[in-house]
Length: 65
Image (cartoon, rainbow, N blue to C red; front, side):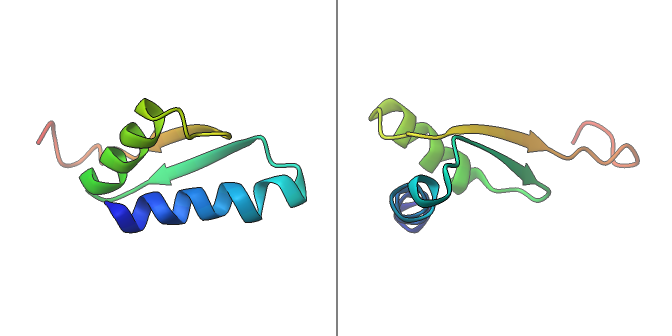
């Protein structure tokens, strides 16, 4: 989780201000609980400075599991 948090914070610090990025779409195609936990932790700590829209892909052939 720390690796994800560091990557997100690095993105926000280095790339977002330089390019004027204010919103990001993050497609999620595989189980990534650690990434989601990192995003939640940063949100709880009020450290997200960019709007993140997380989009989870659903495989219509797999069912609810």
